[in-house]
Image (tube, rainbow, N blue to C red; front, top):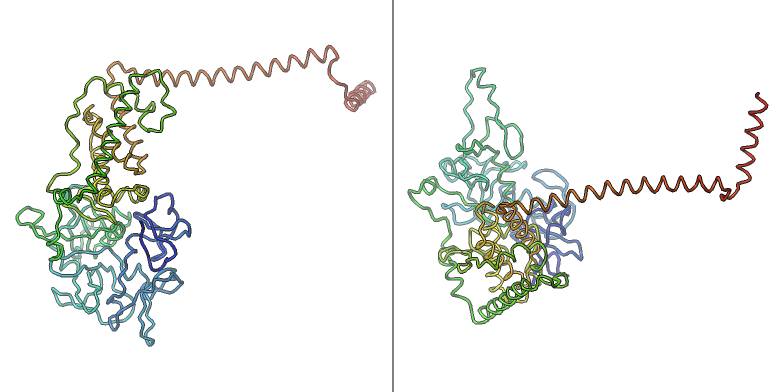
Length: 518
């Protein structure tokens, strides 16, 4: 398992955990690794997911005379677009008379954008470039495209569109902390004579905290007053491997849904129901085998409860420790756990995230798992299709835990989370982070539900005893010092201490000096 990259043929690249690539730079673009990152830890080679599959050739608006070819060998160079020194991959004009070179960051400055009026994905450019070239014409207004423009980089395609021409009546995907979608606002018209009150109105980008000039377009939300530079939002969205889609106002208002998928994608839409039906006998047997192991694990937990005096410290199960003690004790109360956690519905659309498939609503969860913990399924021996199902179960459980308030947690819900976590664990996925999260939720739940407040009292008693131990240790040290001092005094009086001749001579000289002074 792994990805064979032409720039690193020695070893296959795998999805790395955050601790592996932190403070490292992407070999392709030179930026700090962030988000989903592939790498070879043995060679200290890392590359962002956004840079993993760069196009071999692009038709770039900064250099319209010739197409640019990708050179996937890291080397120092000066980018013709930003005029800065870089070290990484680059796009080069192979015409000896040009020698035009541009870095990956400037050549592909944003995530791919899907426009319903164009057959290829496009890229957003805050500025087209420094080289004096004849700019492309906007497909809508037929005016030169020099800034805030979306361009197609497909060779022999010269499509370009001003951002305002393409999005002036559209809404754009909003950060996940807001429910609404961001709307593009055109630059404010500056009157020749402005009132003093207008001059006091200063807006700041909530992405970079810099002042927003009145002469540039911005994205904003009328509902929560969020506002940000266009280039800041594109920069934030660059990593992660998912395409951005411009959504029409009509679709947002619910009047008319606009399908932005290409014709090829329309013919291959897969739902969760289709995904489950496509399982072959091998995948079914693999998942059934894990189900049997889960039953055995639950029986082990129930058997432990009957033998409370026994030790669980030697067990290799992460569900037989003190953190799960109260949960196991509550299992005997006969909680209702007949219904299972609904991690996906039959009509949920299946999308590809890196090497795996999950439902569309679970894709952001899987993206976070990959970015922070790497490929947690690397040691699993089950097939790829079975892994996809386990990932759906894992991400569905994480999403359910993250979106449920502690006050709404029930014993039945805890049981279902635990049951799914067991399944994922027994599939040989490395999910200690999810197990730890479940422990935190369980502790919070029982602290809240405990009417007698016995858990809080027990914790307070532990804190009081710990403080008492500190005080007693301090007293013990003081007593030991006093005892040692007293013991020395007794020995000195008895003449049991060894005599230091030099010290005695010094005492004698001092005594003679005092006597002479008299």
